Length: 296
Image 1: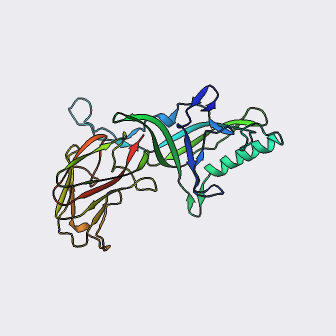
Image 2: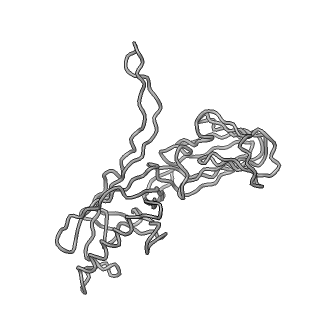
């Protein structure tokens, strides 16, 4: 059990960060340790993203005409603290608390302030929490792409401890779960969307992908629940054909661009998965979904 002030965090519920550059590049680093921690439970990290778009005003009509809106980018703020704690013992450093404090602060600054040769780069913010899904209590792990959006200005509480806010900008507002794969044939099937967001409306990234692999054609794959379908209107000589939903590309197994054979209806993305049960039909062969649930 990790403790921060009067807040107790279960050991399997915590936030972590994976930087791109620096001595900790590619390493998942917990943000809830004895030497630094998130000092509050709530705040913006548990808020919903705002919706982008405006309703339309019509002359001589009451009110406004509703227009569908989409989640906007958002900034998540982590209220953190650090102190002169030895990272090995988890206790106040008996040799040099000031040095331990300075090292902890420097490591956090270097970890969050990520820049590459072309400017700022996105790192990964990861969240773990316990929840019941489809009647089963489990720990969910989901990751968002983020970059620093604030100054991390410290408020000192003595010479060897400080509190500060870490503002992280999520251009794509979703946290994405582990990749899932499910094959559906002509008998049909269903896919359970575990998150709150719509799979297919975000952006491709190291933590988010959505592909549809087709074994035979012509074929139409339909999400009957969402009213969305995608059609590959030709035979498939080099199986499978891979539709990359987030990148809007289509290629067969020989690497040929076959996007001219693709059409779709019901939504701007070629295919989507909405929260809850999605009833899927496949007119020929097998369609293999590979995707990540998206959480807010």
